[in-house]
Length: 465
Image (cartoon, rainbow, N blue to C red; front, side, top):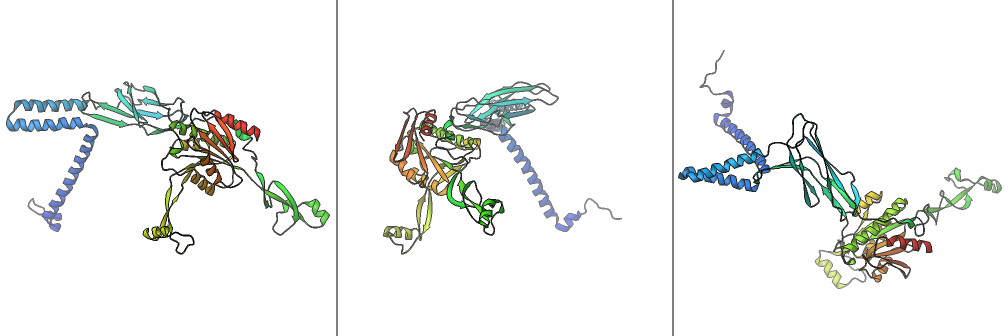
């Protein structure tokens, strides 16, 4: 049996060397110390305010100079600052509640309707919780509330009003309790909830005339395309291999001695398109734009309620598309060829952009309309109409909603970009303007000053149709 003495070299040091082992252990200890310092520094940054850091630095400097130079006044000042910091840290003790919940009883409201958030603080623990101050961010402002001391099983219920003067999405929360000293040296925040989203929808009006007049043929209208199965009967023809035997007309087959099958005309559902102009130069002010959004939302919401096939399109920003140079193309100008050569064999062409909003439900459409805004770089109305006609098919009726700054010539140019056979209706929104209705070259142009004018305009046109 061998015994290890104090002077014997450890086995690890014998294998790797005493210096290597010492350096490794020092590095590990330094890393642990750095981790502890970083953790405490992070905690200090989260609770100490800039004023607190200044007082702390001043106390350190005062104490160093006091004991270095022997100044009693500086020593008193330094230790006084330390006492103030210690007293300020005592204000951070406590949580204020066991659990705090933030809910939105109504997550969607229209502009001008009342909305509120509900705060419920509980104390499910056995000990009494001290009072605390709550901060609830509501949009761009912060609402403060005070939660009183909660005994065991106590509950605090509070309602916070949310402004809904403007269309958009209002972020509510997160709720946090704030404990801070009166001087402002220490501040401790505890987050209790996530952010809740309140959708403030544009104001809409009931449009009762959308189910008649303009929007007819809810079950589809027959076309000239023939099909083997549909609703609209067209004629009889001889049976061909592969035809469905369910459509054999037995009486005609008995008379002619040959199997005869029914032939139908294909029916298609008429599709409604709403095009909302987002160009900033189409509106004289923000009220005109908000009126246009409400008009488009009212038409789209009614179409969804009537179970119509709807396409809701808004104009977007133009994109630059690189096109390869076409050498020897007839009619190509020298300037264009030079630009293509300078651009590395490709030319840039502005391509209008559009965005199609979801129409699966009324709420989804209005949620998307909460985010639309007028844009100075939006595509022109004519280019937007052309891009919408290329991407949306099967449209039979199109509503073009824009502002009062658009001229009738601009509206006619946009309507001309739509395919033939589409009935176009242009709505010019001018807040507090006069309601007008006229027809220019087959294009119905409405002037809307108030949202309620839309119902009367569509009802009048439907009765004439």
